[in-house]
Length: 482
Image (cartoon, rainbow, N blue to C red; front, side, top):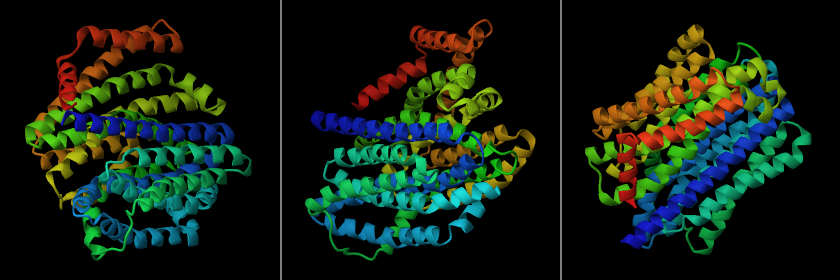
């Protein structure tokens, strides 16, 4: 048993490294975008189209959660190839329809995504590539689950990482052709992410004709995919409200969101990959679910607190030097503030990311689509009202509120709402208070870089010396999973 656990942890860490490579490639692409095209109508067009890519790509990761139990049982029954065929068939038709619409009517879709005339043109140029790449990565998620059923996590991890890196290289080489280079890079990313693991699976005989009607899996996938896609839809709605104010607002809001999402991906997403499998092996209960979410949230929020503190005091300096001079001054200061305003959203997203796989440890959840629909319905009037009152900061607050409400629905389903809410709130309060103290006080007398360095040192020293009980318990819990 110990050997199996060690293998599970190693596979989770490898997948986490792959996630970091994907996120890192996206971050570098963002730097290239800002330095090449500045802060205006072209970047607004890019960020009008990009949320659709993120929304569709989410399905790939959800497929891995939903389909894996079926693939494991099918592999035991020696019918894995047929089960993979069922899932590929069930997804191929709707994905093909979405790609065809993006190719034939990109301007119509772009008109729904942004109210800026110039930005609409650039969004329409990118949409066919954006949607095509995302569709390929969804099918890649099916293949990754099939390989996982064969205890192969390395192949899909390397495939997704190689696709991201190759796509970034293509973008850099072809950037002279304009914004469309990002579309071409995403196209290469999608192709490699699918074809690399697909070739390995086919060589092993893991592809076959379906032995069940495709719609038998569509409803099951819909239960799993609706909520994560709806959460990405919340960002699409907020991003739409960010447009129509001043040129560049969509870009500023999108960069702040992507920075926040990057922090969550490097912490909670990677930690969830490492801990969910051993959690499932030991069995689910309300108490274990609550402890699991609280512990993993503690370990995620500690580094996020440090990152938020750095952005609070030195964000304008960093954006000026990393993203380019157009992101210095007032724009850099606004972007830095927005990253801090996204802190409540990061807290809710961390807990959601860790709690969501636990729903499928319990079994199917027919109520997830209802929660997704409710979240989207609430988001529109909420963001409309908060934008009018607080501008871009209000949009960040709206995302945090809706994400927190969605998390609450998950915790009710896990029967761990009260315990988990209290534990995560304590973790957020402790990390937030320490961050404000160790970065705020030196900032009174020091410059931004000196404040960031001193703050980081004090942050580590305070938490290391204090060792809050919640953090100690979190570390002890995660160690027991190994």
